Image (cartoon, rainbow, N blue to C red; front, top):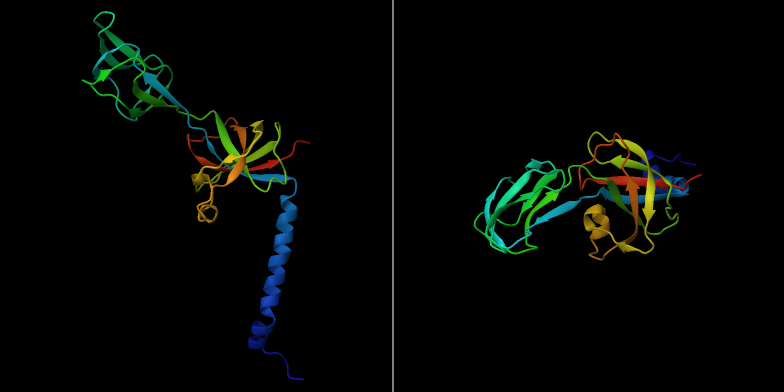
Length: 215
């Protein structure tokens, strides 16, 4: 019998070998996935809107876009016209960064008008979503591994704080390109996760999470 050449092996047998290896790898990964839930999420972005309390005119803004402020800092001066003419000031209600300016000097405002928006300097928690199928439904107290997506990948252990009761649309920015190419919304179970001490995340930063049921 003529021995099988390398070329014949590649043509006849190699596809079956590759298929077998892929099948074994898939079974292995599925087994490793058992008892875990893979989530997508981002560090929560919190905004505080500073609004006019009285009708009047903006005399001057004391801050610029992306400027950091501390609680109590003067943000703007206003000339109030009711019930009597007086100069008032708008102060920062919390530490933050000026993320948006809605009114400028010379513009008229009425009570409730947004003048500036402050963004939080640090996120307080992670808003995540467990993607379907929900083979493992996260629960309060479950341990979570958080992994950043930066070049210097950082991981940290955390806990689930709260779990939603109904599926919600996942923000497209959190999904891989293959999941948003169909233009159909994907729904997941919302989960709130603590940010452990020592893990530095920027508000809005996307992270990967893996949950394992509490023992």
